[in-house]
Image (tube, rainbow, N blue to C red; front, side, top):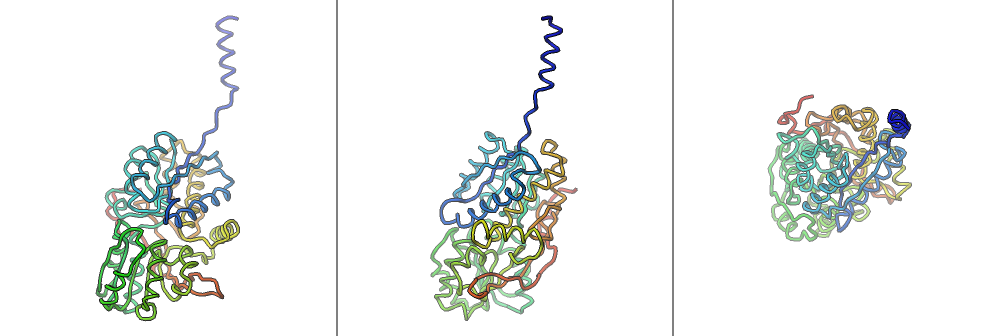
Length: 386
């Protein structure tokens, strides 16, 4: 066979060999062990449900999901992120419940030119001057919901409030947000240990301060323990309790009557009537036998966000085109109303919700919109313009 014929044969073989299809790879980091798994497992469940609802393919492309348990430790989260970026070569890292963990991985992931998508954590540290074109938050910026509660409690003429949160980035952001819009006196400002179980000392100090009301941010098991102890101390009927991300579908089955009558703020609720939310809530209840918490709604929205952006960008190879598709923020969300600010954090509604006993079912019900299309206070410091 001549060299010319051989060359033609090889060229023909190359031309007829199918090119391997590009695969979207997503690293999902959340807390799946220890007490905080009460939050992480519903997020994982909802992400998997979302993948089912898009046919197992993001943007119509073959998709591989790699789950990692961060054990609520920043060093573990960083190790997982490094492995996913360098060894697994993921296109997106997402998940992340805790703000201190998000801060730990933010730099390494974004510097690697990998998209980082937060499904929960919204620290102020990456919302302003340190915003990144490769970081998007599809949940909230930490200060936002407490800003709504501060405004609501001021309008209610509540003038003396005791505030409490865990001593980490999100807790500090939440209290800062509340104080930004609350016009009354702060009777006490306390930061507890992350994951704390016993609040007797804090409750004694709170009682002695004689506030008109209490505002707390104590997510997951922390909120369950605090509210139970608050009720046992006989304070529920004496000092009204308000919260952010504390009384929800995770805590209500354990709290029941102890939580009834408390008010909270959130950007999502299972009773929102849009079609995406109805499909999500019904699908989650059918698959897992429970009402989903807001953590789950955010994880589900993350799937819809990625699916929509990849589809509109025609794949993942053109990062600029993909980023522009993500910035559009017009994906089918459980929240109904959502768009991105210039810092890639959400602009969305803040709802007032009340915990109620609905014929033996303990749920939160939306009472009204406190602020419509609310953006965070740090976007003005973000240098990104698009």
